[in-house]
View (cartoon, one colour):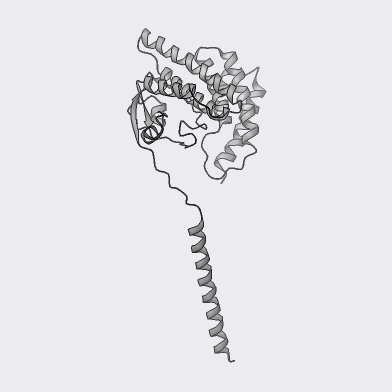
Amino acid sequence: MDETGKKTIRTLVHSQNAVMLLTLLSWLVIQAPAVSKYYPPKTKLMSVESVLTNLKEHRAHSRNSNHKNAQIDFAIGRLEALCYASHIQSVPIDQDEFSRTGITWPLYDEGVRKGDASSTGLPFEFEHNPPCLPAADHLQFKVKTPRTEGEKNIALRHLENAQIFFSKAVKEDPALLEAELSRGWCYEQVNEKAKARNLFRLVLGKAYQVERKVVWFGLKGHSITEEAAEYLIPLLDPKRDQHEIQDTIKKVQEIKKLFRGTT
C-alpha cells in the first residue's frame, strides 16, 4: 500500500474515533442526572404572627428527626429575632411550598435581613431540605432602635422567644452551630456580655475545627468561624486578651483562604 492509501486509512480511523467519542459523550449527557437550574421560588408577604403560629403548630406535631426538628426551631427563632431587630409586620414565604404542604417557611434575602419589609424575599442561600431558612444562614440581623416604649416591649418579647427556640434547636442538634451563635447574639442584645463571649468562643472553636478540614471549591461566602470572630473580638479586652485576639484573627485568615481561594 502506498503512502496515500495509508494516509487515507489513518484519516478514516481518526474520524471514526471522533464519531465514537462524540456518541459516547452524548450518551453520558443523556444518562447523567439532570442538574436543575436554580429558579427563585414564588413568594408572597404574610403577617409575622400568622407565619409564627403556622410554624409553631407544625413543630408541635412534627415527627421528624432531631436534626430536622432543630431546623424548624431555628427557623422560628430566626423569625423571632428578625421581629426583635426590625419590628416588621410581614415576611415573605415560599408560596409554592405553602400551597403544597401548608407550611409557611420564611425566606430572607439581604434586604429582609436588614429590615426592609418591602423586599422580594429572594433568598441568598436557599435550600430545599427542608425548604426553610437555610441552616447555613448565620448572619445576624441589623438592629433598629424601637420608636416607642410599646414597640420596645414587643421587641424584647420576640427576643426572649428567639432565645427559647435557639436553645431548643441546640438541644435537638448540638452540631447546629448557627443556633448556638444566635444564642450568643441574643445574650449580647441584653448586655449579658460574659455569656455571649463564652458562646462565641465555643462556636468559633467548633466551627474552626470543622471548616479548616473541608475542601472548598469556588466562592463559599461567609463562614461561621468568621462570623463568630466578628462578634467575639469586640467583647475581648485589647490588652488582657491580646493573644486570644491574635489567635482568632489568624484562624479567620486561614478560613478565608479556604472559603474564597487564593490567586
